[in-house]
Length: 142
Image (cartoon, rainbow, N blue to C red; front, side):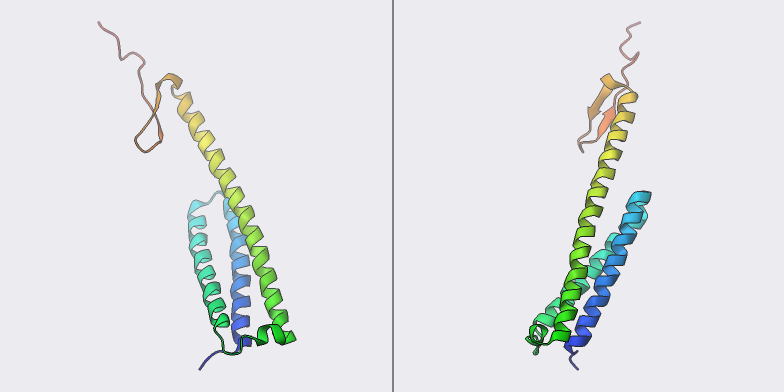
């Protein structure tokens, strides 16, 4: 049996709210620098986005989809879902920027650590990572 528009909208709203919760968890994980948790959250986020896409496709192909704009109660649900998703997009951008700042901070710290081991002996590997070469005392001819 096909689902009604109301059922699909309720499911989509539920998934959008779950995505909002996951994004809040992601913000905490980024601030706490918990990479394992961030990986798990990314997986959850991807699953929720796929569910949203699936419900959107079901709504778009529903036989009564014109009621989404004609029926005021359904239209209110659509507006609410769009608002939740808009907020999720904004929070995702903020989380992405925070993650980039954390990555830059890590890279700077890593480079400083590498430089402190021997500024003149730093080179790059084939993978583009910095690597120190110890040359102190290795060229003594005795």
